[in-house]
Length: 137
Ligand SMILES: [Zn+2]
Image 1: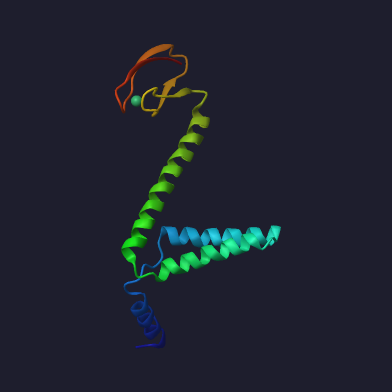
Image 2: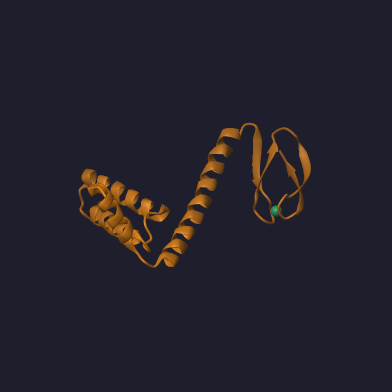
């Protein structure tokens, strides 16, 4: 086995049963990097300390042997981020299409519904909760 092959095998042996890098760990690393960069501009030292804490958290996740707990934390993080991504995407879509469509919420379940502008008064049924109501666009 070559020198690098031995190093790779030793690393794999060391990392077996450990959590490794996941979405939350990567986000913590990026957060730490961004906070460190911010600190070079503002130079309070406090932001850098926070960034360092994020680095330590990322390394802790990387080498953690409690994979079930880390996976659950990662799953919660991914779910939360996906919801935020959807809301941000919907927000920009609403701005982009605001001339063509009127956006409003279902009065009962608050799901977002759109109507083409200029279609007048419409009797609607919510696609999610089937609540019926009138809406003008
Ligand atoms: Zn509804």
